[in-house]
Amino acid sequence: TAMAWALAANGDRGAEALADIADTVFAPIVEAVHRHGGYVAEFGGDAILGIFPTGADPAPGPAPTLAAAAAAATIAASARERGPIRTPFGQFEVGVKVALAVGDVRWDVLDDAEAARSTYVAWGEAVERAAGLAAAGDPGQVLLDPAAAAMLAEVVPVEEREGAHLLRATD
Image (tube, rainbow, N blue to C red):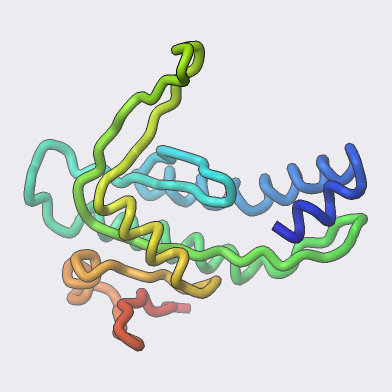
């Protein structure tokens, strides 16, 4: 990103500033996911994948989705309140996009060619839908896939705008 390149030009001090920014942005996200009963499955570049498990019940109802929506609302509010991040090398806007998708998530362990390193990977339609929604959204929005919107519509404010489902701000 432009911010990473701008900070990298400042050597070690720029790298430290980038690490501080990452901590400022990601720490409240991880905290919100954990506080609402989820866990962080992956960090991928500038993204975090939070999972809110349903257990063995194939039709668990809205409880995990409601917990994920509470975390999403907390994350979006925290990002709005934070505002620009100031460093010795300038001020940076760091937008946070949040998406919520309902569905199966599968797990794999991937090895490198020599089997010297392994990594866990979460994948599936819900992960793909969430990634697509986040990419299409605007910072500060919480976008919902149709299944999440249907589960949440009777208990939290959801609106449809230009074909997308959004969790409305409640502040």
